[in-house]
Image 1 (cartoon, rainbow, N blue to C red):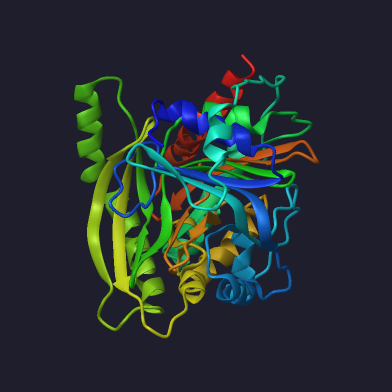
Image 2 (cartoon, rainbow, N blue to C red):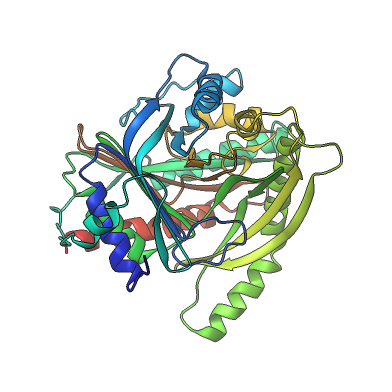
Length: 419
């Protein structure tokens, strides 16, 4: 079916899907992505699903895929680190997202090149979506609080830099949580506003019963195309300018910033190491280093790392070998994650995990859950976390301001939703 108004179709499709307890949409927002398969894809309803919680989640997913070998969409929470490494999570869990959840959808709709198609049997779905009458619900005012104060943030950066000076780590991604209690929201309306404020190439909306992810992610964790694995870590952020001339100067400054380049290289090396665990010997390569990409609020420095997947490495094993993503942990990876657990004040849960899809032919694509609002409707608890890379050269005040910059789109969306 030819789509006349893509924005209208996407909003109608997601509103149509709201009748289901489980659905997931992924939206490229028109970004040119040579590795993407869809402009927009929506999976709704559960034919069958898996939600293991026994310390063998990746094995369970591998078996699940081998049984079904069809389209499946799902979530990897950050706390799966405890399965891939000898780690633990001790902070209170205010959201309680599953560690891993995958489902085979009843309905699957994809948009490519302005054409909508149904990838499952029920072709009446497109007519049902076309008949949807859009509604918008504004939510009551909610108070967003910070889990830690600015002074606590600055002191924690100082302590982490002491670890760096001792040689414990080279870099660590330190995050802080913003949250709201007694938050009664319309998740879909808030997602639409977030997607308007900050359209990004790996945005998405994921409902798992009373848990919601509203994502404006700019980052790809890992994708597989045939025998090729590809990761695109982000390290390096600069605020957009107020005009074209200032914007170009900021872009040039980010590209040439030695501190940002150093942070990016550290994570590129970490990703290369992660991919080596799954790669044909000698096939790991850096396709692009220090690419500068524009987003509504920021410029980001993004590098692309790829390899050829070994024949005897299962697709799920390739994911677990690279999980969690280096851009959200640090180097060395395990020690960085230990310090994250020690110094952060909140459990990450789904934040800095990933969601996306696996296709029938074994290809997959997963984002990084950043710039994302997490919501537990049963507890009326809303949360989003932001952070950045801490190195020996980091300025704590500048890092704190970068956190606020990354939080700005989510705060604007929340304020706009009840204005």
